[in-house]
Length: 365
Image (tube, rainbow, N blue to C red; front, top):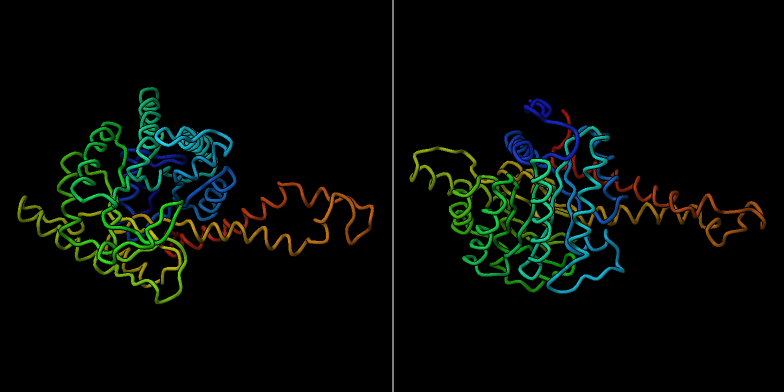
């Protein structure tokens, strides 16, 4: 079944039952929806353009730092308030809502890692969701992530429970992290994390299910299986996506023992730190119920590479407003116009977004 056959599926931002049905369709058909960190209208458009070309769903997501950049680096973003981060995420979500229908594909809008110190950002986005829900009957965003993996597991789950109770009436999807994704991303440095924290256990993950499922089934789990943010040399990181199936099997047994229901893959996983992952690891993760994978480092490089290639090809036309290889009086406006070189960045990012979709089997047969 094509995702377009999901009852009510539409072009534009999807939330609630439609967003959840899309993730369940991905799990059933063993593909995942890539989520791309965006920091501007240009990067949002690049993701949407790739989705349009493939006629496949995509996910736009904003980190706390990326959100502040969307609003503008000149704006105050005080600790404990995070005004610019709230404003930027909300503005980015509204922009995505405005343009996504024109691209003819379903789109999910998500907020990325939110550590305990960033909870004011999360609160601000939820307030925007609640205001939008009051007016339109759906939240502004499709989903949000809480990353409390630095806290003790009991506290992590308890805070997630509290927020999911607030999100459930709007049918907002919660993504939570159990175990730590290593490396450095958006100012959060987990490069010194203990190795055992990089691998979640089936018991850890089922504790999440037990805490959240009675509140709402609309949650995903970023379980740790050796993931590390950023690009790394082969052999430096030991991914073990096969343990995700162990988590599914354990949860299935526990649910069957307590309820009598036999659910083959009851958990919905998210793959963090996927940049540079080998294809067989991605395939193993998809088979184990991964429905979403984050992509940031690779698309950042792709965006820059477009500018790099353009500069190298047109270097002689980019040394001044006047004067180039065609003559010392020739103007260069058509080369340094931001629309020219930003578009070259978009072209290479679109190509990389499409590659991520292919890696995750998010393509039409």
